[in-house]
Image 1 (cartoon, rainbow, N blue to C red):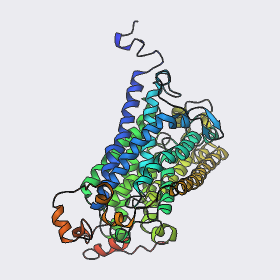
Image 2: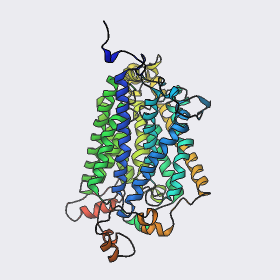
Image 3: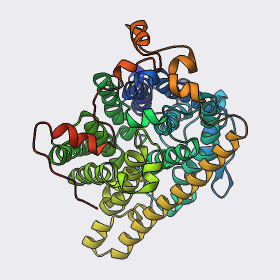
Image 4: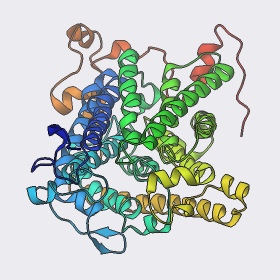
Length: 488
């Protein structure tokens, strides 16, 4: 039977290309891009004080553009190209049509599609790091940090875990869609960079109210819905596994959000909108390394854990551990990405299903990808413990490597430009840094009423912050009965 004219191969649609897979992969890449632009741009710009709205949003906007140029210049082939030494890929451009129009290293679509898809992942990783540096990093230092970190940190982790020649990939670590490469890396690196940059101004640390919670929810919504492409695109095929990954992603996120809100309500008397966003993020991050290799009931359990363990570390443990208190991490990426990502990696090693791993990896030795729960069930206990060990080893590598490399990058940048803004910029904010402000309406009147800060009239507003447990308790105590958090 002859194929319809629109399905016949030709020069623009070679025989090896699957049009449906290519269409889905381009769509998934666009969804991931929308998580950054405008998703995290909106989320960051509305989460911070008014005087930091432009700078915070622009850190994300700049990073997205800078990463993409570096990615096609050398980053992609360092991550997914030929091996140079041990865990380093050879730098090379991804701009030539002969290279871009050929078949990708995985999937039935062109390399150009793969470069685009993976470039969106690289971009969002740098933007997540920015969340730990809002409100005080010198923008010129950020301009240098982005290409340096992409080159010397991201490409190494991506090559090690995702490239078929990577040592952790060969070892058998399961990272379905970036729990290690993106979230654990960005959480650890963001926290490390925050240590080197130093904290925000004392006044900002004491009171850092979001300037627009409704708009913040819009940004969070784009982040959530975009995760369909984030996890659904990683099988590199429009398959049943992609469908399962997308469904598991949203179920885990919803469960995690509800768990976080219930804990806030029970312990602090009021459900927090900011807390709901944090719970959503931890659920999305936790399911990411496991999305297409675990069953639906496991995604529920992972959501319960991702909504409670990071909640505890952020809302309780944060105030008890000196290092966590001293390092200023405005978006709490150490909790929402590093801890949630590591938790997801461990749970992947426990819940991963051999059959689903076969559907995802499609390799002859697929049976080595077995979670501990199924190892115990089928009598392959040693294989299950081995997978757990590999998952933990991958976590240890990502943490140690990113702490060292991020520290070296920050020290190097500090030799060229200051990592931190000067005192005037810390006090004034956007107007001093960019000569622009995010909110012009009524600006003159506000500035006239308080010449120490552009938005002094809003400094005394009461709002729940990421870490201020006391503030939850004090606001709740005016009405409802509250319970003290007595966990250690």
